[in-house]
Length: 173
Image (cartoon, rainbow, N blue to C red; front, side):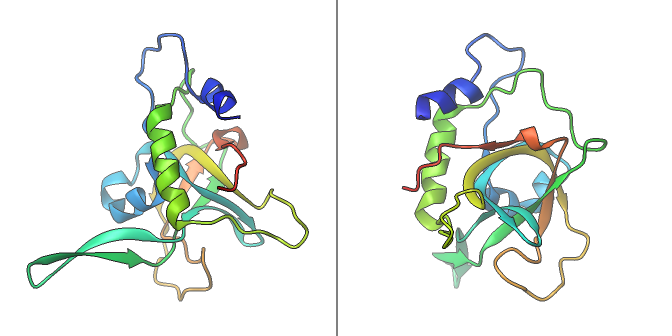
């Protein structure tokens, strides 16, 4: 199954552009001011819920400096809202090549702190690992009270179409 993923995402033929290096949701949101407005490939847990579609991580490790000592801290869940906009979403490159080694390594990190929900009706359609190609934008109203794991999302990723939400191997390890 992993070989199929690599074949779908990695381009064997020489491409004019180097392979895209995926960034985790935590990497994006920890430096949102740096990534805002950029078109990127973002990795995380895709969740389809009543209030929308999200790409998230349950916990992000951050370094906090207290009294000159660097300490690792765990932040609350972070999420990007996925917005499909065929008109303003960025057009993908002709060949979407992905650095498969980096993708594998980062997916392993995401899986260590994030789990896929298991629903009573046994459907895996609502939580899956995914990479999303789109433009990162800050959400206009970030000062809303927390309503759950996904709301309010700090930012969104705007995609041209649903085909740019690429689901990864459906293994729950």
